[in-house]
Length: 77
Image (tube, rainbow, N blue to C red; front, side, top):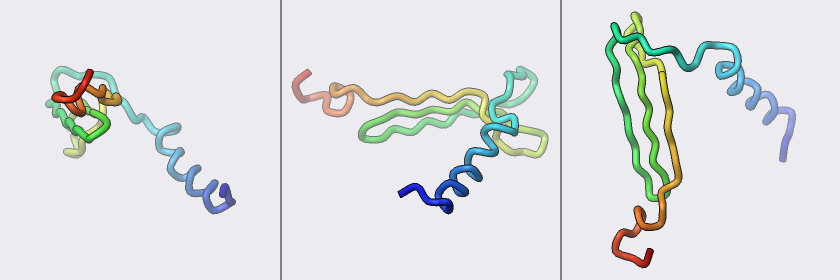
């Protein structure tokens, strides 16, 4: 149920994504890091750079649903 408490929580979560610079442009002078995760049903990866405060800031994000043949390679296609 969508209550005022849920709406307030959603707005608090939404705020950093809409008002702060979340993704940044590539700067080849800075160090990069990648992080990848696989799940039973999905893949995700993030390319980030290290800021001057030594925090990771995302540059690019990729995620997708895994295909059935990726989930069960020995099963029927």
